[in-house]
Amino acid sequence: MTKKEIPLRFYNTDLYQILLNQLAHFHIHPHDIEASVQRKESKYTVILRFGEEFSHEQTKDFTDEGFIHEKENIIEFFYIFAKQCKEVMIGDYYQMMKPK
Image 1: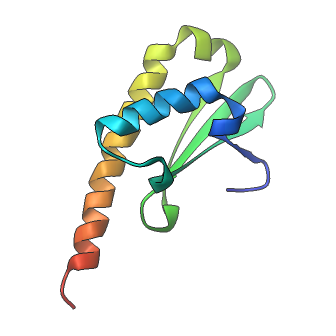
Image 2 (image 1 turned 45 degrees about the vertical axis):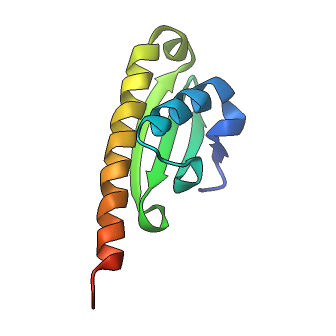
């Protein structure tokens, strides 16, 4: 997380709760991801990191009005993120358990 990024759980608790609900569908713990926001004028960028040392990243831009009117898009973005996060975590696990 850079200095200009704000943790999502502090910036917008409603948005963070939606993310947690989507993660719960895939049994992903909130500590397995890093969620932050970077504010840019009238929009904000949600930055989601996951995987080994948070090396994978997904971002999406939203407007303040978009959060109110585009909840389905937000839920879909978080669902796709959670699904991809689970796949990467499973791959990382098997890579870690692979005999050397």
